[in-house]
Length: 363
Image (cartoon, rainbow, N blue to C red):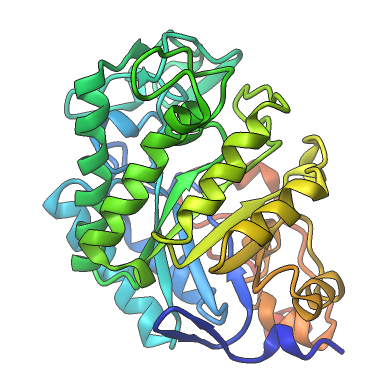
């Protein structure tokens, strides 16, 4: 039986109930204008037995909100809405970080409001299509490449969103530098063809991510600032080059001064290439803070990686969708509910807050 997984953990100034993190997962339950809805408070409160909840991606600005019904943190109404969620989680004794996600080229103007536009490091469109509520599936548009001054202006957008998150009652923020969104678009050579100070070398490709991390930590505190990375991830048309390894090595070393945790995601279980163990080891060696690992974990494997020191916390994603009481199910070895993929991104309560807990399942 796993022991460390269910014991208390420390994260900066926080004491967590266990070593289990609920990974960020887009669920598209906000309004068409990207405002929080009451059902979202129910959803997160149901899962507050996790040591730490990291929310779905939250846009730091109108330009970062390229998906349908994904919430933001850049208006006063959004701040007020998120306060209902943090209050609900805290009432259950949970801790919750806001994941700040700028979608960059991964979006469509049809999904945006308040004058948002599709921008990226370089004018390279992602292959494939994106869903819109009004027009169905549409091709990804070619983004407009940000000017150097606009890149510099995008950094404080993240910082202000982090301040808004603290005002809304969050325990901290996770900067989304993974999964093919704006920050990773700067990190990767395939999507960054810039020749200014934000591209063309390891140091320049990493600059945007590190400036956001540094300035966010200065604004709200290092102990309230984390970041998510996905080396070897190919989600959202992000071809990987082994040359990018050097960028991740550099970023990991520099992040020790700025963030309380690095959250590494491995999507092999969802069909992506396996993450090279050497990159995980290198990041573990270079980054001196808390390391969260995520990707296809069960309780046994989680316990092994915690006990060995490979990870300090373990994140679970999809199992939390169908199992609001996932912590108890893992602890008791109980069978898990199967999720309904057809309701992953639809509006309303179905497939969101209606999955049974153990007592209800037995009844």
